Image (cartoon, rainbow, N blue to C red; front, side):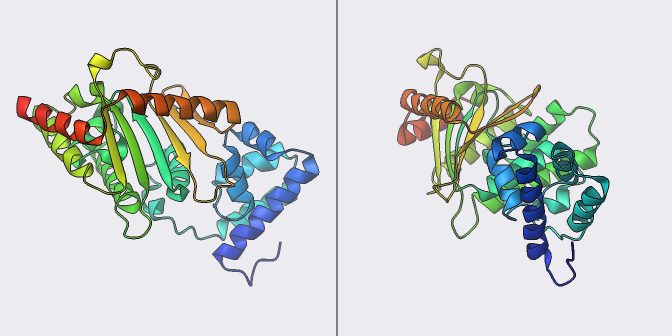
Length: 287
């Protein structure tokens, strides 16, 4: 594996080529590889085409899955060590759990997100104080420095996706009323969060729809989810579900039809854009 004349992009492509060759030699499909290391098909595809730098644990897992010998595995790991990843999130990898790093790389390549938030406001729409309150509640033993850096990470994530000057991420969010009534961080923090959402609905790339209590039961009472769509129409969309029991990346056609149908139904039941803005302004008046 001679790589002395290659830059990071070339080494990334070369590593992908080696991993693809190993997969094909093993007789595995991309689907089987993804299932074997708990990654989505698009993630495996991007690794093999050099569009994504794999994590150390992913290279080791793939090498083992494909039956690579020790010498081959060592060569793959050496090549990985020579790649300088330039993702903005690299500066936060010391505090980011691997599952979050994997998702953010996927989100960074998406053209649009269709999300449903049940228990709390979606992370791309949170204020700094709301972010900190969620982090403290979900990780009560985390040191203050870790909370501070994770909050900074999420704020930069918002900037890198929704606020970037060229081709910003399109966000279509349905927020259950439950996510807007819970006083995360206290009443003042919630009020500031609602004010922030009023500003968000004015962004051209952001759609916010509120699903009120009086709409009754709905198809997503079991939890929140995200659908990621990509610029290349040939690249399949991915449904992402984050839960205490693990993180799921789903891309099979039946799964995607189910999530797409669910999001469409939620949007159909929710208030439209202007009605949702009025709901937010009325909620602020009531506080």
